[in-house]
Figure (cartoon, rainbow, N blue to C red):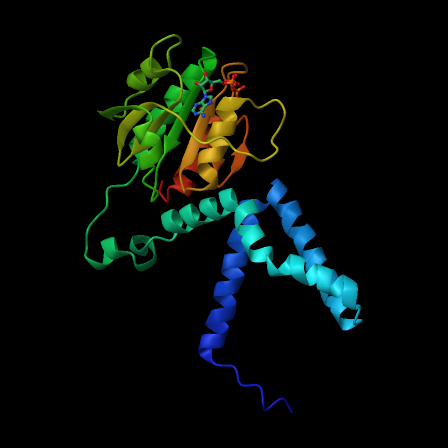
Length: 261
Ligand SMILES: Nc1ncnc2c1ncn2[C@@H]1O[C@H](COP(=O)(O)OP(=O)(O)OP(=O)(O)O)[C@@H](O)[C@H]1O
């Protein structure tokens, strides 16, 4: 029985790749209006299959025309999502990461932050929280964040608590926007980040929306200090953990940046 079905290794790989693509697409559009559109289109397609199977000529041909131009319509309707998806693939599945060229050639890439800097960042954030100073700190990993860095002031400075607190001190020119940390340095300040388009807690304003937005399409993580509440939040992969303690923040940072204690 079923001897006519032969499954090759490539077929399994094919299925796995399609599953991975669908999963990433789902992650990208989950919670957005695009998700509802996909469900609507899928229902329409199912209806068309039923209409065709029942041989309902008139309705079948009208729907057939619609589905015929469907691919073009999809590209137009999903233009922003397709763009986001390609950027996501480009930044998160780059050849360097997949093949780990750095490891292959024995190059020891500088970590985005070391243990010592994590403690400094946590101290700075909780000190700013106490004085109700708003702050937004992005820690870049594999994604270069070149587009966001370009929008700010280049600093290339050593990470220090006093520098971070000075940057975010109210009414200084650089306190608006985000600080971006990469390769153990504060590379830029006053950077503009993309805002999340998803529905989030109504109490969260633009600072928190920007913190979530940048982690949706990149592998960066962010720390936000609320000016209103003085609380500290951690964001990774589009998910925000609000009001974390100093210890929790340090643990989450070490875990997401793969640092040992
Ligand atoms: N796109 C953006 N990228 C980076 N920073 C941004 C962006 N949009 C707003 N901000 C920062 O957020 C500040 C406004 O924060 P807002 O009060 O709306 O946010 P919030 O999430 O309610 O935070 P808080 O609890 O600190 O008030 C701005 O002054 C600016 O520094």
